[in-house]
Amino acid sequence: MLLAIDAGNTNILFALCDGDDILARWRTATDPNRTADEYAVWLKQLLALENQQLTDIEAVIIGTVVPHALHNLQTLARRYCEVEPLVAGHGDAAWPMTLDVPEPDTLGADRGLNVIAAHAAHEGDCVVIDFGTATTFDVCDYTGAYKGGVIAPGINLSLDALTGKTAQLPKIAIKKPEGDSVVGTTTQSQMLIGVYWGYVSMIEGLLERTRKEIGRPVTVIATGGLSALFPEGLFDHIDFDLTIKGLILLHKKATA
Image 1: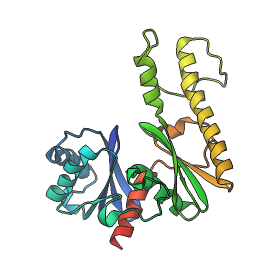
Image 2: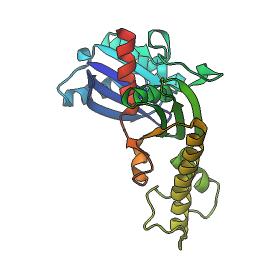
Image 3: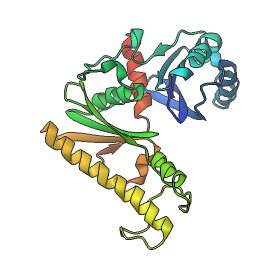
């Protein structure tokens, strides 16, 4: 069994994998102060629900954009799973693709993993849009080389900034506004329209510019839970497990 860990700014996703199959997924809030012992107690209980235990885990691979969380996750693997974990982008798990950017060391692990999985699943040039704490666009060409991308504020981050810096705007949950009108009649509907349709317009505009710049057909893959909010046809594919699939593929390459 492989334990694939995707540590993001907001949540950490643990996925129990057998070959290419993802058997179970568990999320917990990202907290760099959470100890390996705390992770182990939590994970042991969840594994038991799947009739598994920590000693059934034969390998661990970690992808993280939160450096302060890495040590405790590595300690979890070493102390409780009794394996030396791989870390995406480092050592034996160094990126297997060309990073055609001037500062390759700054590539976030989740973005590199998304590119690996997208290129493995789709021919030609790809754009991956990941709706996380930030919304990122990542471009890889037909050879799998990482060409760069875009970083924009995430949807919830934008909402938090809007309500946190205004005295009278209420806190709202993001969802698709009712109907297709972009003229809201209440404060809440106007906020939803601004965030939702504003995001749709941003995505459409950036994709149009990206396609023109690449000059070849492009496959657009969306990932992240909020990708399901958007209209059908905005993306070619939605893959909620893209980052975990990238961890699985990177582990295979690192241990081949």
